Length: 424
Image (cartoon, rainbow, N blue to C red; front, side):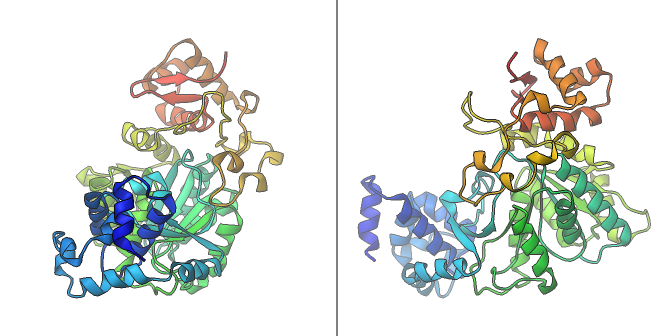
């Protein structure tokens, strides 16, 4: 392939989207060149195609790349990789490859985004808020019960449950979301043909069959390795507005994920307290004590964090680029949705439009709490505290109801106040 010609086309403005996606996929397959270096290189050159067309010496300006002994060989291998064979390998596992321009916006905004992801199943539409639930692999009975409780109640509100598919807390969160018919996404630390842990193969199948997704930034043929799990964890938190930690020791991967989510990704973090003498909860207690994590006592506490200023800025709820007359998605507690509206009609292919993955909302489907809150907003825009005072309810009760109204497209936050979007 003539990379210099492609680079000239990029400068002339005739670069095709398909070529750019291919270039990002090649960079994803360049062993040894990390995602942060790839992003900086693409931004410096102006495109992924332009970056790949540069001579080896050009790449030496980047701190990580200049330390690679075999940089030239890595770049040559990336330019020559058989993308057709890679995509065929993915298809054998019922997966597709999404290059950087196609991955969710939440991942594109990371400073070290994946250059490509391998996806089995259906990624949730961007308007569906997501919460990461992470914790100990050797979870106690208390931790498993609480992970399942939080995951199930949040999933019933329409929140997508994201986790790493590991033993312990991760698996409990995924299974609880499935039990209530919710959406869940598992992020793996290896290729889709290397299921880890192997006993979770049925769980991953159930996630895909239920309308969720199993994803990874590692190509087929890549075995899970310890150094890959921190990279997996940044995707778990990057896909989520809030990270909930259930049981984490002082030095644990879950706590590192939470710290990264706060410091590098700007996410909200909550920790579930455990028994005061439990070493498995010592990390959660420390995070709460140091003040960089919120205390999560009830699932409503997590719902409140979804509606925080920071989360709203990331999510841009209720839906980016929605036409004023377009259909609104339904994300609501299952108690307010008739059985006939659940099930397969909310599922679709990863590339399908969000409208095909949702059910149209109507004011007739609102429960009493949602109706009261919408009525309170009809007269004037109000902040959250005003709404709580007006309805004589604690904020913890108001927050999840606002979550449902925002996801239905009937209300939104304008930066200071909540505004009614429902027709009179």
